[in-house]
Length: 47
Figure 1: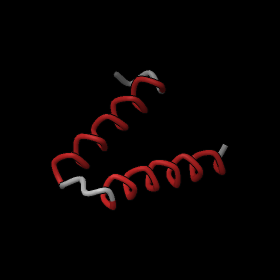
Figure 2 (figure 1 turned 60 degrees about the vertical axis):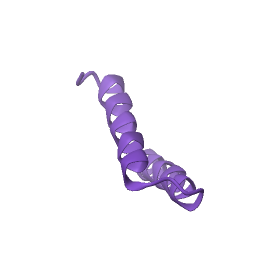
Figure 3 (figure 1 turned 90 degrees about the vertical axis):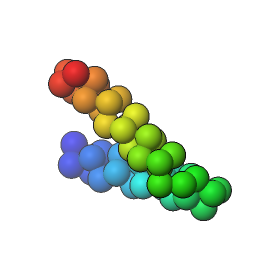
Figure 4 (figure 1 turned 45 degrees about the horizontal axis):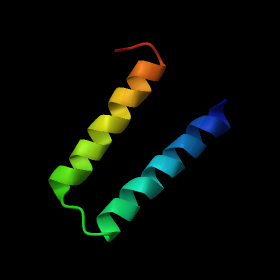
């Protein structure tokens, strides 16, 4: 399970970096982070 947690972090980090490199600004990246957080919380039953 621990490896999956790290893999999730790598995938999310890569997605965020793609957004930054494609020109997304701080507000757009913050919105993406918030969306990931919401999705993760919902998946873990924390919503």
